[in-house]
Image 1 (cartoon, one colour):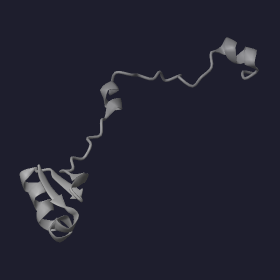
Image 2 (cartoon, rainbow, N blue to C red):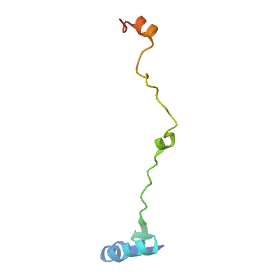
Image 3 (tube, rainbow, N blue to C red):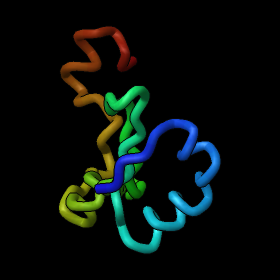
Image 4 (cartoon, one colour):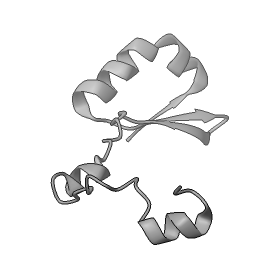
Length: 79
């Protein structure tokens, strides 16, 4: 962990980012000796493919969207 003040961070931003990238270093930016921000390496969040776990495990029947005759008749759908 490396601590720098704001004016140092402004003038050396490129080198600080390079250290973060290459050395996986954390940088603390301070103002008047008090820490106000932390710069760390960014790791993108992995997207989870949750629905893929059901691939070929769920089968939809061919007549899925057809009403049973007695129910359709009671609802007035079947003629």
